Image (cartoon, rainbow, N blue to C red; front, side):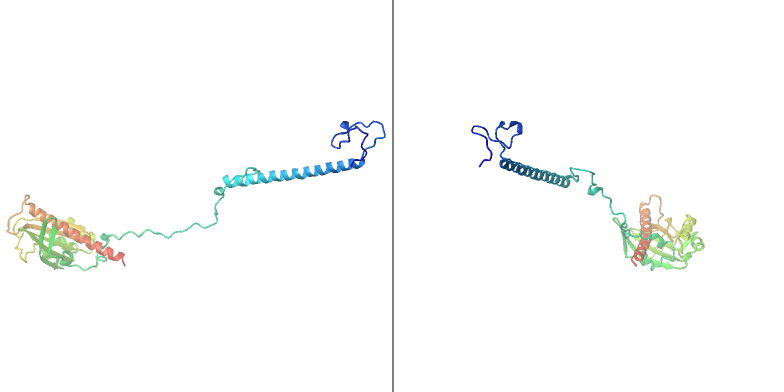
Length: 293
């Protein structure tokens, strides 16, 4: 249906064209088809609304896409692509400084007890003591050398078991007990004497005062002949803790020992070392026992 169209052969009014491009109707009795114009206007308005709505939807989609990109980017490297201000990464956030610092109980063990403390004073050196406790067993093996244990002796009268200058040394420094034991091997015998004092200072002083004439008396018996009573023998003197210990070694046949008598020297050295180790073990045993209490 058309309203107010022009005469035959004239083009109709095109609502989509500007007025300068519309057909010229002249000055005749041509009037616009107002109904058609109104319909065309309504069509244009409807088209604009669709364009506006469509544009808004596209803009919304674009914003949504931008947000999605920002979220994906934030999950990837801890920064947003559209940054108005950077957020710190989780590793840059400060830790809670109000929490108390953890505490740990000490795990280090106390220092071990010193064995020397127990053999340096009569107040701590309270373990039983006798020749057979200090020198146990029936023989002593040192390397390939085997020494047979002979007689033993113990006395509180220290001067009775020593000779020459040693009685005075022991008496003046307060010797409380003298232990003796004899070992022998292949015609050589040695007597070990251990003098006991109350303190280490007394034992050290006795050692310092002893001279070349401060010797113990040999202890024969149990198959060991009398030795080192008239013959030349070798003697040694030493101390550890509250103990001073001495050796006297020589031949059982009465022969004099000389500087070339290697068997006499080795026998005396072996037994002196054994005496030292036994006294030291005495301190170690008491220290271990005290630590376990």
